[in-house]
Length: 53
Image (tube, rainbow, N blue to C red; front, side, top):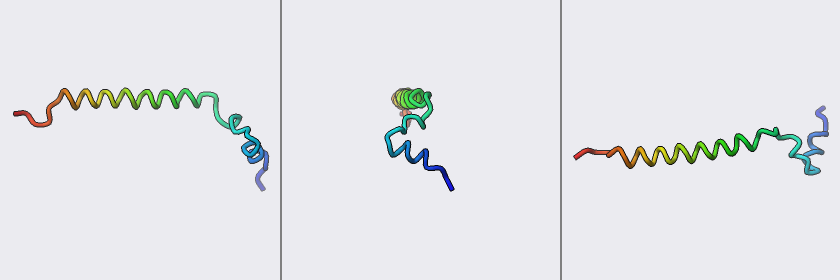
């Protein structure tokens, strides 16, 4: 049978103890890389014409 300690920690609001300390770093780096790649894709789409005339 599984221990009830993790469930009690989550139920009592102690979920921050279950997450790693480096979690926010990867969250910020993920959203920053999404913005960077989005800007690069927009610049590439604006600079390279789709059909030359």
